[in-house]
Length: 237
Ligand code: NAD
Ligand code: ZN
Image (cartoon, rainbow, N blue to C red; front, side, top):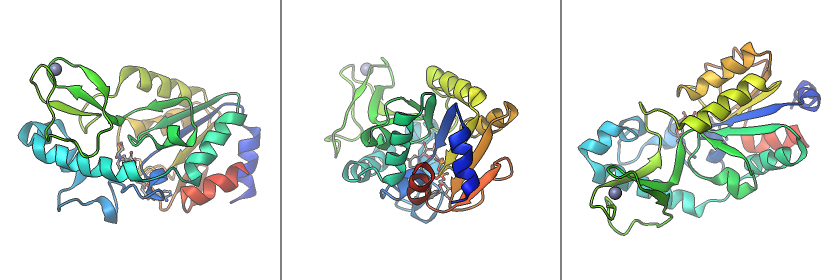
């Protein structure tokens, strides 16, 4: 932990945080990019798409059922908890996440802007009926709505637009913050990754926390290499 990172945090009045799957990796949730990313030799990029669901809804649901079963058994880690306590003590704090696992809320974060939906929500592909469904395993795969049509996971797939309200709040937070902390994202998924240059154009300081270099590392004034579950608690202590 560099003293400068702590100083930036203490000087910040408007803090925004962008998280990606790396922050949940230490809880035991596989990331998309990396060694754990494979499931039955399918790549996530080939399953998390509207085309994959149209082609083989059963396969896509089996993958989501597997991911839901993992997430249902894990706990938030010190990285999630550190962000929840940062929210508690910061008058102006916005948390934007690309994660669908719900671990930020389980750690106590209250205002979370979900750019990519939730793995615990489901939505009818015909009538649009949407609700929470935490059943693990899903009793019937693929599940169907009362109207008879297929039900899909309530997440945003590659190539789909982001939920308008969450994206608007995220853009507003990025443009207005004076410090943006970017933790555990490969910064390869757009438009989420564009929040970082947006914050930089607005004059924000940027701290990146990641195991490795990413396309954003050049934009970040400070790039902290290591585990989010170790660095975040040190940063806010
Ligand atoms: P990604 O899988 O593309 O990248 C993960 C990043 O996290 C990598 O850059 C990696 O170096 C870093 N990382 C891994 N472990 C880390 C740790 N302990 N500490 C700090 N950094 C660590 O993830 P992404 O950027 O979030 O984008 C992929 C998409 O996948 C997102 O849209 C997201 O919705 C989805 N996704 C979500 C979950 C989840 O909800 N937990 C899991 C997998 C994928
Ligand atoms: Zn329906």
